[in-house]
Image 1 (cartoon, rainbow, N blue to C red):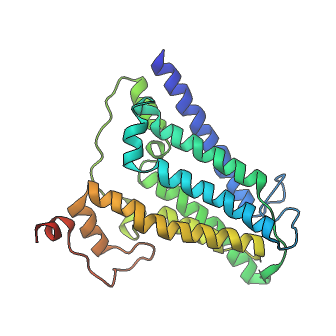
Image 2 (cartoon, rainbow, N blue to C red; image 1 turned 180 degrees about the vertical axis):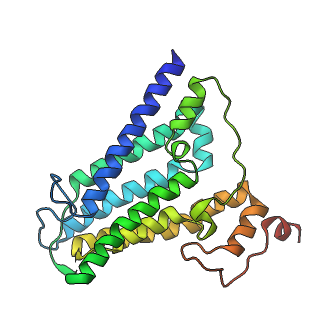
Length: 255
């Protein structure tokens, strides 16, 4: 019975992800068919709207920063079955994003308004960014990233396997292609409102902080030599070799 419940829970969380990701694409892209987008019913710039929006973005950042950490996972899986840990993270993310989309306060004021060929290019860039995100998830096992593989393996009675360090697909060119895709989508918009700028700037800042001060530190602990060498070979967000070489963690610790 536990296997069936965990599997059903994982499938539900994955379906929620599909819905919320699709809605996010329309929300940020101002697709008019949706009941609400990032620029729906804008209001004049005011402290209340800014604080509400920053609060929603901070809630998302905290949920991600806390629930994705190995220390939290070790404690969390003493309470819930290990096979639904990732699905729970995905479901919590969907809830927080749903709250953000629901309560977001659009702020009027045009930062830039492109037209003609430039507008078309920015629109293409936006969907290209979302495409990069999706392809990058495929590269690193899309179904494991969103918890479906874990509950499927548990349902079939398979033990979880350790994943070796590898650099598939887009990861051969940049260390964080998922984040690159999001950054492109945040900024490739034909019409940038003040509210959209607040979202893009805050979300981009969180990406840079989270990648360098949280995610990469965790990866260096798991793959000290391999990931340190990877950091010397491939840039974080640009397909170029880093300017500053980093000594492998294992070697640095021995000095």
